[in-house]
Length: 289
Ligand SMILES: NC(=O)c1ccc[n+]([C@@H]2O[C@H](COP(=O)([O-])OP(=O)(O)OC[C@H]3O[C@@H](n4cnc5c(N)ncnc54)[C@H](OP(=O)(O)O)[C@@H]3O)[C@@H](O)[C@H]2O)c1
Image 1 (spheres, helix red, strand yellow):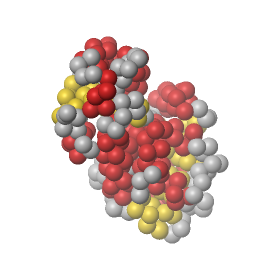
Image 2: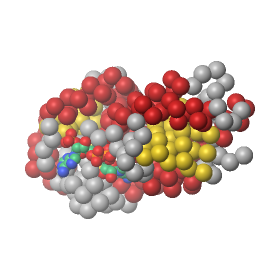
Image 3: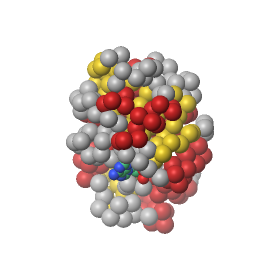
Image 4: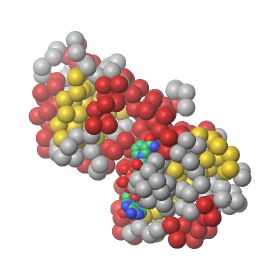
């Protein structure tokens, strides 16, 4: 029986990246629905659960993507609400690679510092899908998390979203551009800096982080020049730089791909898996980073 993955993407064009990984993770057929909304979910899920008998439903699964985390969360909730009795299929939420990328970064950073409890973690540009998930996972693990945004209201919105989803107390700092990074790092005095800013935007100049007392790890997820944290190379994967352990986007990205593919494979092992930040983190804990 063919393994079918329904790819619901809130963007007009469903992600080609997610489609490729779906095949590489073990799907035989990917059924893409771009521009999907919360209101579309119920009937699309009905199409999946009423066609094959309950005992074969581990061969059908749902992947939810798109660049809007809040819409992704609503689609996942709507999909879960549609299931009943034996009519269940596995599902995964990964808006913009949020969960798989954040989990990969969190695992690498956690292994470098050993224990994040009580550690001060600064997530720059932490209002996008990846930053929201990384900040949430760190907060849930007991870290003291600060996110930055260019705009106070976006920072506040992200803080509320993270706290209501993961708990913990998130602080917000305004970081409009790279010239303000040193001031923000002076205020936060982080043990860890994780940059989740967009592709091609430098947010943390080298002078703001190198030789900074207390800083143990710096990790940049932006792979497109100019990189987000100056002085970290994309392939850095635990490189020591003056007492700071550094990770670049490809250094983290190799593990992200392993986590993403393993998550797709997991969807077809059973018919009741719900892969979101915490469950993907559990799965990643068993993989070599
Ligand atoms: N290495 C990997 O395997 C991997 C995988 C997936 C994604 N990524 C990378 O991870 C990063 C985060 O992804 P994402 O989708 O969460 O990011 P995103 O949503 O594109 O951007 C994150 C935040 O950056 C801020 N921002 C936008 N334009 C900016 C600008 N010109 N200057 C400063 N800040 C700006 C916005 O926050 P405010 O409006 O609140 O300031 C936005 O919410 C990206 O660099 C992406 O390419 C890496």
